[in-house]
Length: 281
Image (cartoon, rainbow, N blue to C red):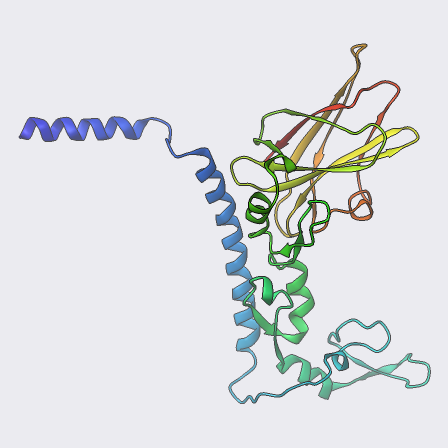
């Protein structure tokens, strides 16, 4: 019995020395989920700090028109400090601050506008814009043509897999090059979905007189890390065109939002319709 126990212990020690046998998909999902959970904890902590300053002497009130808390000039939510303005020309009247309104805003607790997509945070009204600009539950739109599904980025990959045909996306793996064939005469958005964590990307192809303008975007909140990518175009004469950059985080796949920043121009006279893509974490 003693020899058997020792052999078992030696076997277990030997197994611990090798590489992890956990599936790659599980490891990738766990890493990404951990990052998201850390952001959720930070947002909840910020909300707790904001609400703890309210004090215990509180009561509930109902505002029938939420627009009353927006600036009548720029229509953005009020922010502190608030200065008194002329009712005729709307210009600021010196340095006279509206302290009463500032105290009302500081004491108000409001939910996130993305509550229906999963955000449970509540915070002071003055923290609303700062929170929502970094909220990881910002609504993301399905990139499939004619689909109007909107959700948080948590639910979007599962929706795409279950509701759309398997050929609706080009499946790929991080750090491994893959080939995509573009349309020659029309604009298009090619959906890319990673094999391990199902993250959705879009390769945009905008056709114009010089050739094609292409870039790669990721459908996720702005606050999440960007991915690195590489695009390689080759000609039959042996020349090549390569571009390395970072994906742009988008919540809706449109030409206006994706080509407002960087893109690669691939001249049609020298290169074909095949591109080699590689996306890295």
